[in-house]
Length: 307
Ligand code: AMP
Image (cartoon, rainbow, N blue to C red; front, top):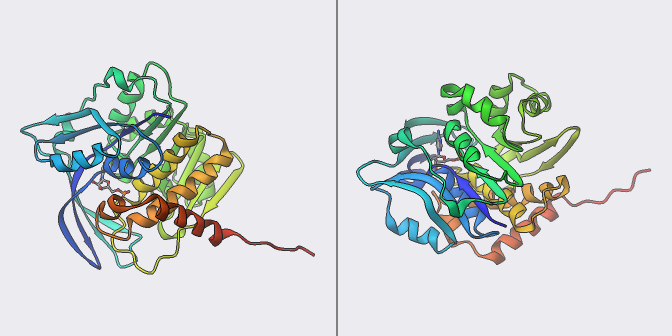
């Protein structure tokens, strides 16, 4: 089934305990597209880039069924730039620089070819842009999933609350869930966030896995214990791409299928962190993905006889 992906396409500068990369391709929509295209195509991308964004990167994504009719190119503008430094635990990071650049003027115009999509992934981006995309769709998609981050809570909370009232699933990490809800307990945070709109809340906990909440139902997906994590950048977006990619591939948005989808998301994220930037995502094979999903099945599979 068809999928629209909204988000940034960016340059990132990264520092991890394992090394530094000054200017690699990143952005929320870039990672979502690389990940989701393993499960569903075409992917209708909505973003904005400057004339500095390499054509070669667009071509590589194009070969993966990513369409760019909804990507605005500002020839004399600069692409979004983000820089981050990871702490030794690799679960926490500091944002060093966020340069919105062309994003500051982004007012997406959805092409006609993007209408009637069943799945909408609102990757991390200004909530006003996320709202504008929903409003331009003549028919509401079957499922709208939204990601966001603390940056938007700090600079655009009112818009963010409006956006929350329009979506089905919210994906955030644990600290963002706490910041958004004002609750330390993630169970209480999930309840409060559901009251803001999304009936499904996914809380990501980095190397400690992810929780899916819906009413009184909870499901937990672990993260694969990895020997080495080189660069966690994009892991959240890659998770989102696997999650929505699986749902779009199967067309099934039941809670039971969302459980499978967060396992698929976790498996995809486990690849992303193995190399810098999108490198690992670009070389992945179907066989590797299936093997890794099987590893997840084995990781959580046990039998017990209760006496
Ligand atoms: P993640 O590690 O999954 O949170 O995503 C990292 C990616 O998000 C990087 O490639 C950045 O370019 C992008 N990013 C960082 N800050 C923002 C922001 N405020 N809005 C949208 N995308 C961002």
